[in-house]
Image 1 (cartoon, rainbow, N blue to C red):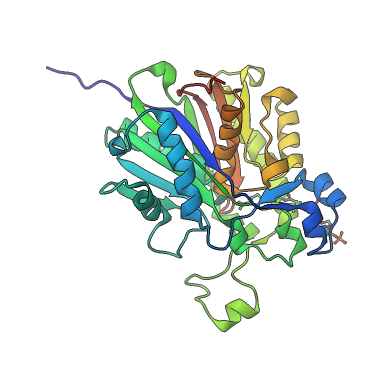
Image 2: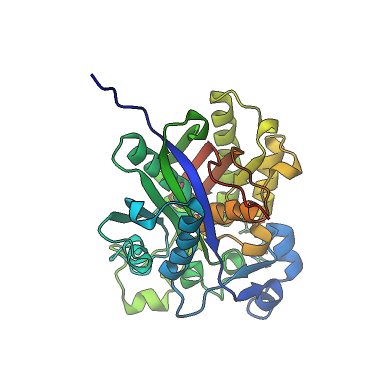
Length: 340
Ligand code: ACO
């Protein structure tokens, strides 16, 4: 009797895209009552990239995905699932941005759908890709985190407009029989009791499009920043401690700790609580701001492009976002390093 071999999910490649236009703190000083000093001190953010009016989430997602496919060495015809995480889809609510990206890439007749988990979206996608692959249903999954966050930001609200940027990141997750290449562990969770910490009230069933939506700015992101900050530090730290303990791995043995890039102070507090050295913690928030679902793959791409990420290197991902949602993942990079 023939036995089915166990297959695992592996992280094959990474790609990212950032729009050209840069919005600096000096630019924001001219738009709202803020200062470069306040923004840098409270968030670590110096600039963020903003898409042009005619450049939408699917454009950025497709560019990141194209790079990830090329770097994976697999043919696009072999991709059998396309997933996109975004809270700024091209359209609320159909067609999905994943369908539009698939079409832009010429990947037709494969399953494609979006998920909404805010900043946790990319790690949530990894859990979905893992489940599809390990159940034997799919072999090569294209996962994309893409956001045109500027489309839901009120550029007269100084408490939110300084934080967010646009961009996209993508990865190919493939089936492997090698245990060394396999995801080690992944944990994703949510608590809707905190739904009002981060919310874009409209358009939706609660507030369908109307004049009132426009007049009251209900189409813009609203955030309880301080409450979110405190809960983020607590949850991110607890999550990482648990996943490391469960897998008997010490924090000093992680070469790349890649947290969601929301605020330097959150990352520093979590890194310190976990006794991480500076060289272990990946930081891109200063140049990209918070790009929501794109932030983690954009950060992975940064260390790949700079040649820091080697084949087999262990990555620890940790994220937190609207919902509230959170997730952490422990996995080796199973792709080729960027040889310069
Ligand atoms: N410039 C100058 N002053 C400001 C600005 C600004 N841009 N924004 C707020 N302030 C003022 C406030 O009005 C307040 O003034 P007051 O004391 O006179 O009332 C003061 O600064 C302090 O405001 P806080 O909100 O308490 O400042 P805090 O230190 O909490 O920093 C920040 C605000 C940066 C938003 C922080 O709370 C934060 O980063 N929160 C977490 C956000 C986050 O992580 N989101 C993640 C998920 S995102 C997602 O899922 C899409």
